[in-house]
Image 1 (tube, rainbow, N blue to C red):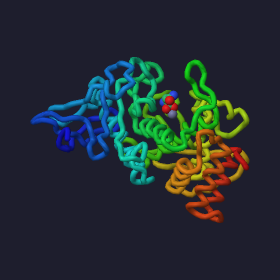
Image 2 (image 1 turned 90 degrees about the horizontal axis):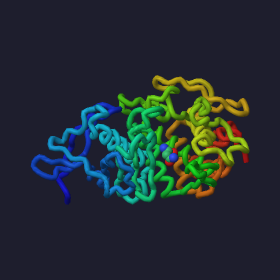
Image 3 (image 1 turned 135 degrees about the horizontal axis):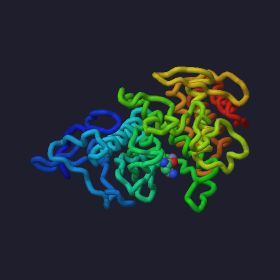
Image 4 (image 1 turned 180 degrees about the vertical axis):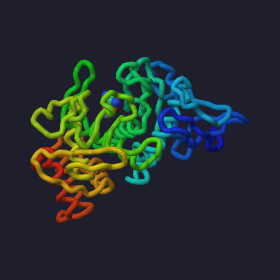
Length: 348
Ligand code: ASN
Ligand code: ZN
């Protein structure tokens, strides 16, 4: 093998000091690669738009201490990325019994410092890897290596390997539109926030907000309880015929909101330090069944019943089937799935 499994320590930008599995490759040389998780590895794209993992530069250390918590140290972002990836893989394994992005036991690959002034992170399917920009210096002033963004991007890999939900339209700038693509974005946010809850790192308190550590003026990128509080992408709360051609991030609110209502219910609620207030289209009151069950239902729907063209009405049917499988067609869980979709204006 390419080294002796070791445990190092990383000083991250966003989550404090974290342990990292590494490989000892010489008397005083270590590699940022986790052999206990299928050789999961984060490399340096060096500010270039590299699209092949093999072209990235491996991160090495002489001390097995990584980064210093400052953005100026190139290893710091890699610590956050690697920690987030490992946390995401562990969430999928422990909660959903999924062994890696493709469920084949393989580790995940990522590159940080992708391109110059890139205010985004991507799952790049041709590479089978995640790419993280360092921020655009305007909306996003720091590397996009926060935990829920990592959970979001890796979940795109999971969706690619399962239902493979596809946008119905892509414009000349590469913006994607339509309900299956919106559902894809929503699932990425749903499982991305689950990664936070499962990881439960005190330096990254879990919540139903996405990207709350990115330093945005509105203090989050998107949120599941009341998606329309997002003014950046104008995410919607409810289904309408306009969803058929919505930009996929803006359209994602329909099913993200349904998931939140299923998990936590409608109305006001404080969880951790965050206040939520989730409205319903039909004025109904929804009583949540808990995040654990809601997550199992959505995952089973994704992996068994959704296909590349599944729209929001199809997602309703898929989650009802999943709830029926797991809890029975007469169960409170099944009925709440039905109520949650009605509450976002998705019926029959
Ligand atoms: N961060 C964006 C996303 O995952 C990047 C993209 O794919 N447009 O949705
Ligand atoms: Zn996405």
